[in-house]
Length: 52
Image (cartoon, rainbow, N blue to C red; front, side, top):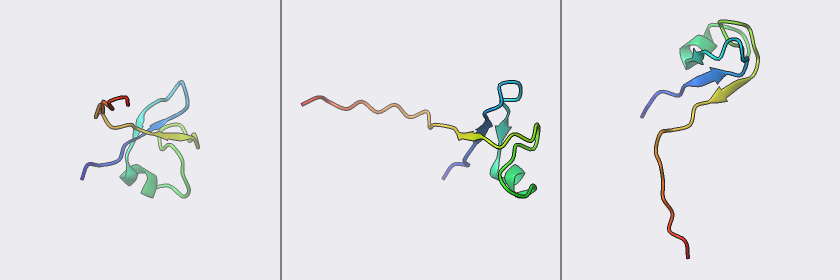
C-alpha cells in the first residue's frame, strides 16, 4: 500500500503534505502556509474502459 499524498490548494504554496505532517498540527492545515484546503493526489494509473 502506498502512502497518501496531499497538496496544498494555496496557489503560492502548492507543496506536498504527508499524513505525518498533518499529525503534527491540530485540525487539517498545511504545515508550510497554514492553508486549510488540501487536495488528495490522484494515482498515476490510467484505466481504459471499452465502450458498449
